[in-house]
Every structure is written in structure tokens, then in C-alpha cells.
Length: 219
Picture 1 (tube, helix red, strand yellow):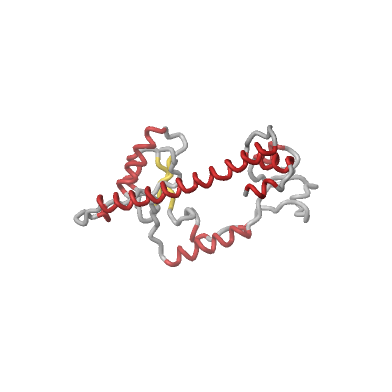
Picture 2 (tube, helix red, strand yellow; picture 1 turned 120 degrees about the vertical axis):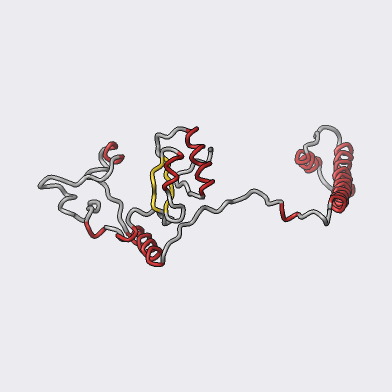
């Protein structure tokens, strides 16, 4: 390696020193010795790190052998992970209706009120039927948004059902959960319910096996 450094110019040596983060001052012999020392040091450090890793692995294997106990049932310890949500008990007809409604929803256009693109307050509002003799949207011109019509209606058998298949029941306290059938109905906590009461509702719903559709993650 030293012979390679001897054949290099001072400028080339300084480039190598800058890349290694070493000082570039001094004569050519000093630069070569500095590079030689830097080249040997990393190799020694890598060997030491490899020896430390091998020793650590051996200690870990020894610790596992010492802590292993055949009499203990290690299957009893279940790590906390994803908990599956409750699924509704549905017949084949309801499942087919939900699947058909999901397919129809993909083809349903987004309904916008007249001139929603012109005023910001109109873009935030919901659908309003267009009025006026010269209203372009009422005339259903091609470049205007779609109109709400009977043909855009969904499957009546799936009307009022959540996408999961549950029928939603509004809940404002833990007592309202008693009238819910956990197999076909799910709870939706009212927006005005406070945090403390929500905790009681969640805990009671877990006891009864009821799914809460709008459950908050922070509670």
C-alpha cells in the first residue's frame, strides 16, 4: 500500500486525506505515513468488532439455554397485537346486496351544486337542486356536473347498513348498549358524548362483545 502512495502526487494524496477526514498539511512523506496509519487502523477496528459480535452471539445462546425451562408452557404468553373486529352474522342475500351496493358506488358520480367551482362556500356545501329557467345544470348540459336522479339509488336490501354489514345504533351512554344485538347491530357514539363517558361506553361494549364503529384510538 505504501508503494502505491509513493507513486501518487501530493495533490492526489491530499484528496485521499480529505475523504478520510485527516489533516492535509505537511510534506509528502508525512502525508503517506498519515494515510498508511489510517489504512491500518480501520482494519484492526473491524477485527475487534467482529470478535465482539461473535462473543455477544455466544453469550446470547448461553443465556437462552440457561433460561429455557421445559416445564413452562411458553404458549400461554400471547403477545399483544392486532385484535380482529367483530363481524356481523349475515345471510347470503344480505351479503350479495352489500357486494352489489359496493360495486354500484364505484360508478356513482360526485354530485355538486350549481357553480360549486366559482365560490368557495358553495364547494363546501352539499347537494342542492338547480333552479332557474336558464340554469345549465338543470338543462343537464354535457359540461356540467351530474344531477341526482332515481337511477342513482342503491340496493334497497342494503339500505341503512354499514359497509361492514352492521346496522348502526346511536349510543349516548352505556345503558343504550343493553338493547343492541351484537350479531347484527353495532354502536355509534354520539358526537356530543364526552371523553369520560366514552371510556365507560367502550369498556361496556367490550364486555358485551359489541363493535363501536367510530371508536377513537386515543381512548
